[in-house]
Length: 437
Image 1 (tube, one colour):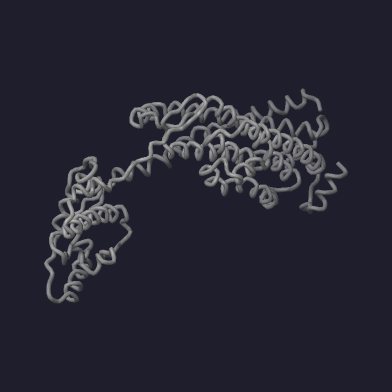
Image 2: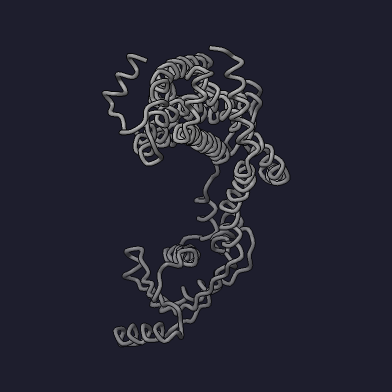
């Protein structure tokens, strides 16, 4: 294999993509789109306001007035103990709930029918019926035309639960303040232990870091693997490959193509990471002040592992996609054959939650050492809790050996497939290409 030929093909593949308009559109648009997907729903939810005109039938007496007081409480962080019970949960001013107490009549059936009529007429939005029998089952009836306003219902349910709980305690003769102080919850203060020392770190923060790195790696590998397949198909369909093969070996063409497109992927990935770092730094600093050092640590070693595992994952799946492109004649056939590759790319997603929850379990260790799964699952384990050095090294060696063998196998199929036109090959024909190439 002549390195100058590989280098020339690498430069051509790299510059063709980096200089294209689509590359820079994707590079700039994707971060904006991702930020919009993450930020906009939260902003819209924060800005949106809901209102609920609620009619309350209170058979017990006093619960409706207590409920109205809790729902009208000003937004303030609830304190511990009795203050938390008195204030209800943290009031959400985005959903204003107005209470109308309805006097109980002798004919309950007629009252229910009247309340239904008022809902249908738009006089009230919903009505609830607080009864002793219902509270024995821990239930309060809620009637409305639409029951999909779950955020407002959740706020109502929390306030109602606390009002009923206080009423039950008072009825049994308990000191409400003392009881709430004794049964108040505790919060786990998570501290991550490492060789460099211990530090506070929120469990969810570590989860989301691992989750983010997993899907970033997954997305980039999937996108550029498809680009390799499409690049081979384009050259094959335009017969450019016949000219190229007259001057370079098929293996040189394949390696140069993989390296060039992989370098373009690293370039785009680097731009995304720098952009993300620049945009998120102010928010991260602010969150550190609020969280008191609970944010996850992103070390230089984590970044190095991310890049190395990206390269291994890219060459692994791109070799398969290049083989698919060489063995098929058009995009439709390629997509059908690509279904063979997809399970190996998607399977790690099913292991994601178990690995994050217990990175040292037998399942996590074994799955992360299976070469097609190693780039994604080993990245998860390293982000959550750094595995023993021998496991990381073994994962790298097994995957590198698997990739080397895969490139050799795919290069033999590629050597024959790029010059084959006409019908779609069968698996038997692929095996003959592999044996006689």
